[in-house]
Amino acid sequence: MADGAMQRRVRDPDGLTEKLLDAAAEVFVEQGYDKGVVSDIARRAGATTGAIYARWPDKNEMMVAALDHLLEQITPEQRMKDLGVSGMSGTDILMAWGANVLESDETQDVLVQVFGSARNNAAVQQRLQVFLNDQADQLSDLVERAKDEGLCDKEMSTPAVVLLIQAAGTGTHLLRSAGRADRHMPTVEEWVQLIAQLLSAASPNDST
Image (cartoon, rainbow, N blue to C red; front, side, top):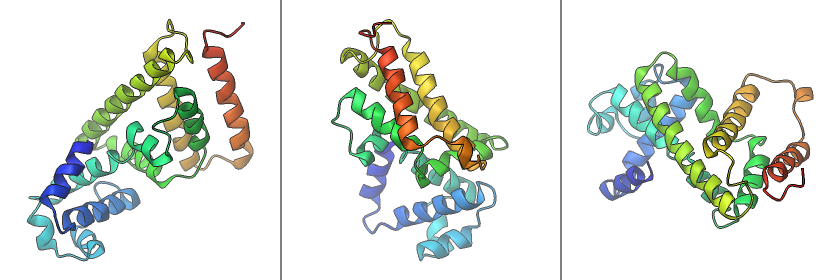
């Protein structure tokens, strides 16, 4: 997905395509896939509807492009870059991820909207499937790195660990977006402590 962003910058020296995609992405998060209005997207980008149709044949194609634009910003690799942890050890990366899960993060709101829209829209569902598989591939690389560093037992199933990470991340944001009461939410310190204990239990050096 990152290659698509690079290609857009090469083809879009004035940045208008990027502005249109940013505007369409905002509309998608606020209103969903089907309710976006082309004229509203153009207005937000400071452009005309003609600028949109010069790039995409219809609203559907533009919203698909906007969805791709959104999802490529929240891949694990991109999130690690945003958090400034790409060069850290697997342990530090997973701890940073754990702490970030409970933070309010507008980029994660994207997934909440995508999951909701995917129920009734085949195009969104297909993009979501691609994203989740790409996410799993990148997380698998991270888990294998953690195994090489001695963080995880090499006999531990990588798909199982990846599923746990995806379920914890996505599930937490879905629960928060649904209005889970604060009294049922741990503090960041409590959550990080739990992550640390889970990592310790997964270590091949764990005495238990």
